[in-house]
View 1 (cartoon, each protein chain N blue to C red):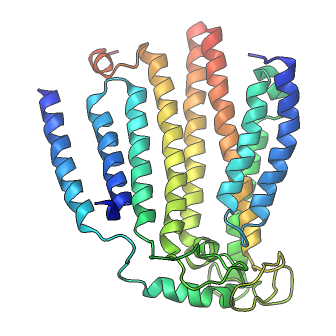
View 2: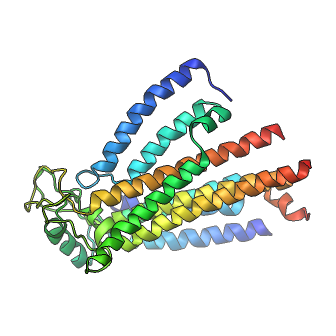
View 3: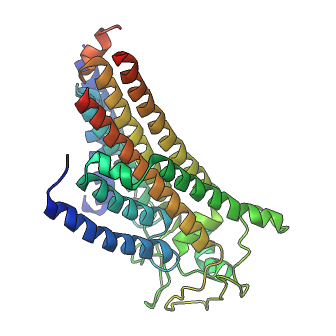
Length: 114
Length: 156
Length: 94
């Protein structure tokens, strides 16, 4: 079953990310789970566009016979930047929640009503 | 939060090298892997090194928040402006009016494998520079705001 | 109760994703007409050696415009959150 190794890695990363979001109690660890899930989706998009025996889609002095598909790489660039924006906003929210409630445990934040 | 003298000295030395490498990655975006976003992230890492090595009051003496906001806005306006000039010249939005033309960045490229020249590319190097300036300003100002939040929490 | 529901959901996700991963073939993409056109004509129309940069900035420039706007909006959001934090401290001390 080693002919499919990038897809198996995508499935493992996605399962780790989803399990971290659903089972952990600390807010920072939940944000780590979201970041791992974003990385799994980026790897899946790049692994879809591979041609057997191809080189990178850039014309240099090397002889070019077969090139890998360039469109998934362009989409992944956009996705990485959006992941950076999401992480920055989530961590700022975590700082503000700690300032208002005094704790980052999800169960206690739900109970305190101020 | 002020680091020792060895850390501050080596941060000054390394900032020059990181700046040159970041500008190289931005400018050669149409010949090698790289471009605007990757080069902007490299230069923002150099700015983060300087921000971490010095204390917060000294950093505010060197760069201000309004200056970084202005730099980020200039980057985005330049990117949209280069695309809108094509609309003013009579063709569609985002048309490449400098490729194969002989003026600023317009040299033709033969088909097939060849070592690249810097003079090619048309509108693409201008867009790379605009996006690099925007990403540098944006990431540096996020780090500066997060550092200010920590300083306020220590004094309170 | 919540833990049992979470574990059932994780197992369902795992089975669904594994069925998808085993079924795909790696290295033989199916529809490549658009990318063949980009590789053949990108060097002549735009005079650039890097095909990925021509796709990001010229053939699909609207996506890059939207992405720059998203990054700008995220930086404005961070600036707004920290301004509320410092002004809240100033109101507490007075």
